[in-house]
Image 1 (tube, one colour):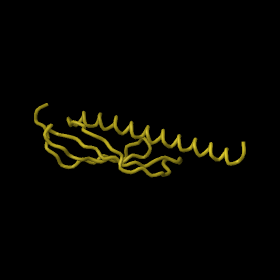
Image 2: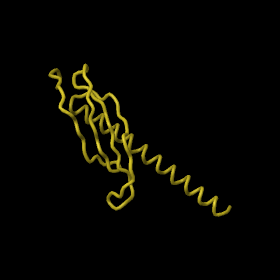
Image 3: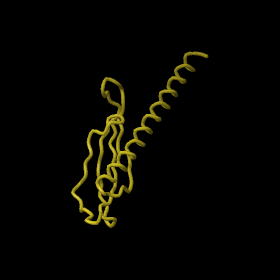
Image 4: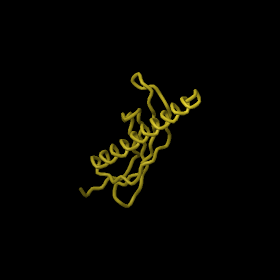
Length: 104
């Protein structure tokens, strides 16, 4: 095993670690949004990651991710909301003005 092999193994390990961390963040965002929409009496339609950038958060390297999600308030409409996360911590949740379902 030479130096190139060691560097290649470290690079592959780092890429795999980054992939699994980003995947974990995305799964947490989906779970958070499902729970959030249930609390707000909204129907979650879809979630998509918009951007992911490396950042230092609480003294360690992590990812800052922005997600777009679609939801419905009455079942006949569709709105887009946004969340920002630092690692698996939700920093901001934004919903546009939307109709409310009066039937609970």
